[in-house]
Image (cartoon, rainbow, N blue to C red; front, side, top):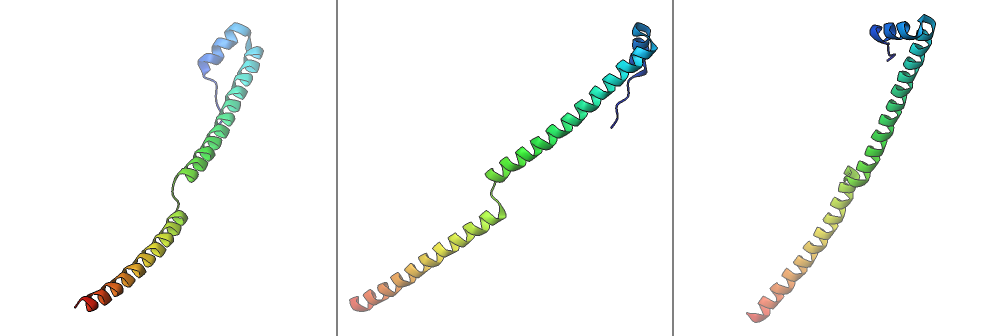
Length: 98
């Protein structure tokens, strides 16, 4: 958004340094405002990208959760298999003890 110089500031410049110089100084001030605005926009974009990258590294993604779920399901299946084997062995032991 282009900046504008307040009328009061321009009038003061005009009184102190003259009309032509006031216009030149005003242009320089406005150019400086524009440069500051552009730089600040670039910094905001850069900081957003840095934050996004940092969060992506630190936070769990859906893909991470799906992988974890798969590993947990494999472990649960293995545990269930061991339990079934144990139950079978236990049943055989009970038959022998009877």
